Amino acid sequence: MKNENVVSVLLHLSQSKHVQAQADDTENKIQRRETLGRQVDSISEKIQAIEEQLEAADTSVVLNYKTTLHRAQCTLQNPERVSGPLINVAKHLGNLKFKVWEKMQEIVQYTPVILDPNTAFSRLILSDDLTAFRDGLWPRKGQCLPANPERLKDHVGVLGFEGFKSGVHSWIVDVYSATWLLGVMEESAQRQRGVRCHPEYLYLEMESECAPDYRACFPPDKLVKIKLEKELLRVTVTLNCDEGMLTFTDSMTNDIIHTIQHTFTQTVYPFFSTICPDTPLRLLHMKISINLQSAMGINRSKCYLKW
Image (cartoon, rainbow, N blue to C red; front, side, top):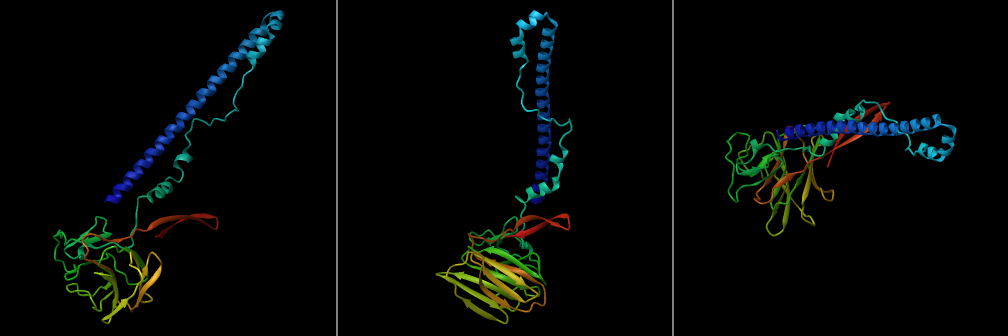
């Protein structure tokens, strides 16, 4: 709803801007025509004065020759071609929708994965745009949520809204919190129990008491410790359903942290967890980039998404 309001306001402002531009354009035309009119009047007066001198006696013309010559001289700017009274419609309305679309890139954001509040553990606090969450245990500000079957019951986590069964999908998460877990969950997983080392969950987790401790878990009941030289701040999760790979990458260095091989036979959902009350896990937005291309003499516009 907020995005719709923003777009509506943007369109209204854009329309107002073009109306004002048209008004300014019209005002400039009026001022230029008035200036030229005054110059024409001045020249007409000089011509009339010369004609009056020529009609006078011959001696008067000779005596007033220098004065008449001086009055006939005038310096004008380079003649300016003034367009007609029509408003420059092409300038103000040409590609208007495309220009508005370009402006919308500055405020409209796209996130490849958004959180599903209907699956969130009862004490999690989600952001309004469903791209971030934190644990509401300390202080205790848990939300009063219905006990629907989709909701996780025994783990402080939340699922992505959209599940994936084919193709390659990627999302980036800021992981500044002290304890977190990122991965995917198969659709058939039991949501009334914890996730650790259950075959329906594949994930990377970090627990930090004295030093960061990273582990990867994948079926059947395998837990692998991962040694890293420095603490992770941002993680890219790439799910390749067709090739059966779940890859975790350090987004800051593009170094692969760990890859889990698994045959995906059903829909899987992005999975996120943290028990940190102060620092939320946050999904990053993608930037929209527009490139214009010409193919076989036809101009086309393409929209690309990039981090």
